[in-house]
Image 1 (tube, rainbow, N blue to C red):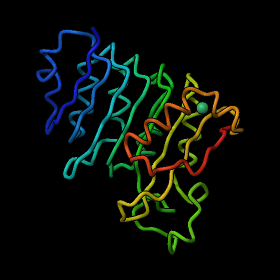
Image 2: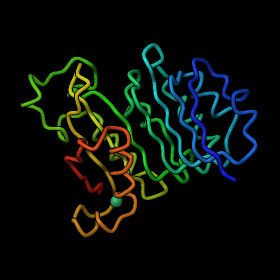
Image 3: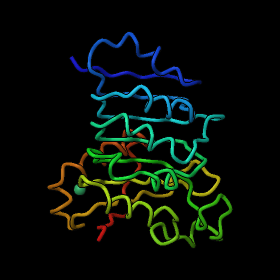
Length: 214
Ligand SMILES: [Zn+2]
C-alpha cells in the first residue's frame, strides 16, 4: 500500500529516517528543510514518490542553486512539488536550474516568494500600489521558461508576498493552454493548482493572474 510521510529534518538524515518505511512512498512532506536535506533526497532516491513538499524554516532557508536539480534526478515519478519559505536563492533562481530531463513527470509546481522588482530583497517599486504583479515580479519570465521546457503540461503557481511582509500580495499561475474560462474549468491541473493554493495559503487566497505561456 502506498504511504505518506511528514518529516521535521534539521539535517540530512533522510535515509535513516525513512528506513522503516516498508511500502512505496508517494507523498513526502519535509519541514525545516535544509540544503543538505534536499541533496540527501537525490542521493537516496525515491522511485515511487509523486508529491513532495519542502518547507524552509528560519535558519534553513539557504540552498545551493543546483541542489534541487540533483534531488529531482532521484525522483523520476514526481508529479507535484511545493517549495515554501525558501529565501536564498530565490525560488525562481532555483527553478531556472532545472533541466527537462530532471522533471519528466512534473505537472505542478507551487512556490512562495517575496515581491520585488529587481530580483533582490531591495525593492525598486515604491509601494505595492505601484506594482504590477506580472510585469514587475522578476520570477515571471523564469516561470514562463520553465513551462516552455517542461516535457509535461506543467502548471507553475507563484504565491508572492509583498517585500518584507508575510501578507499575501498575489498569485499567478502559468500554463500552456488558453486562459479562457472554459479551458480553465476543463483542466484538471488548474483544479489541482487551486486546491494546492488553498491548502498552503487558506481559502482567502485567490489567483489574480492566469498566464498562457507561448
Ligand atoms: Zn490548466
